[in-house]
Amino acid sequence: MVSSEDTEVQVEPDLKVPKVPKVPKASRASRPRGRPRSFDRETALEKAILAFWEHGYEATSVSDLTRVMDIGAPSLYAAFGDKRSLFDEVVRVYGERYGSFGDRALAEEPTARAAVERTLREAAAEYTAPDRPHGCLVIHAATNCSTPEVEESLRARRNANIAALESRIRAGITAGELPAGTDAAALARHTGAVIQGMSQQARDGASRKELEAVAEIAMAIWPRT
Image 1 (cartoon, one colour):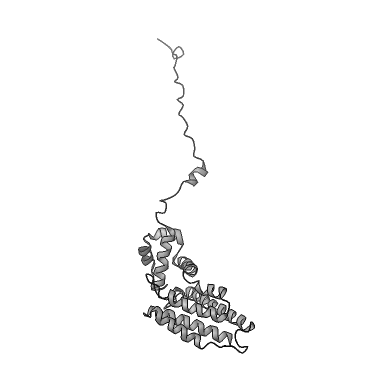
Image 2 (cartoon, one colour; image 1 turned 120 degrees about the vertical axis):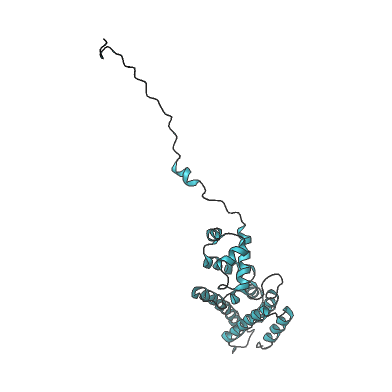
């Protein structure tokens, strides 16, 4: 009979399991989430400009934008933010790309009269250009707008344009180009009213030639030294 003390028990050595290296947190965080954008941002933005230009702010929905920009809503929000943020960018780029003719005329022409005459003449051309909406986006987008922040932002831009006209006219009075008694504020606002009217007339189907005739009549009332 063998006692338990005489029995030699064989103990298997511990099996060593290889450790899996941990991925550093920085590496995990650097992995891109989701699919990369598959659209050209500038092309999409140009399509948004045309949509807001044609239909205005209020009448252009997010679904309208995703359709014309050919992107999904998540891509729109990721690239541009919400509708209001997209519109703010649209207005800024529109001003640089299509609406800067007035600023150039005020800066480049030697007299206030020449600057305004050029502005009206170029407005007639720009507002009736083929292959894009007629009129001015900043003027038209405010039509039937029920979003106070957007309405105020567009109003501020229009008033800034009139202020720039007034400043240029006052400089013309100081330089002796216009009579000393000229009402600079009224003349600037008259010019602004003509420009805004030309924008609406262009949307109603007026031709470039017809708008140039309006510009010619508007300049006929300008005071002369």
